[in-house]
Image 1: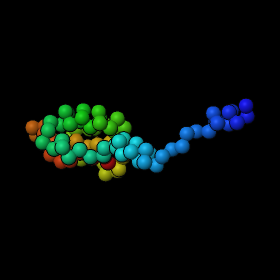
Image 2: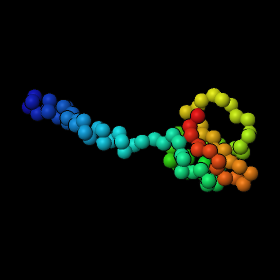
Image 3: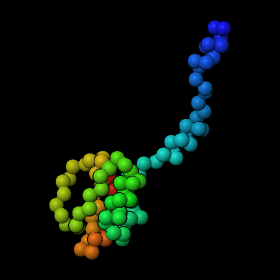
Image 4: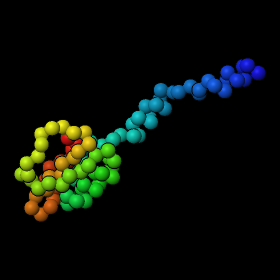
Amino acid sequence: MGLARLQRRTPPPVMVSQFKQYKTEHVIKSSWPELVRSYGEAAAATIERENRNVDAIVLREGTPVTKDFRCNRVWVLVNEQGVVTRVPQIG
């Protein structure tokens, strides 16, 4: 009876290859080059959908912004027509 109880408490062995596969499947995006030339509001919605840890803020090019780095913020810079002009990235 003692051996059966010990076997129930021992976790199954973890294979390194399974761990690596898990890690590569859950990549969190930090930049969105595919959104350049798309509309700013749609780009912001895509960014927030793909990385729920960030707030995407749409700003017109030339608007003064703080220079501090924040891992939960993405500036989406747009031109007069509302089209993304630079690669949005975390910062």
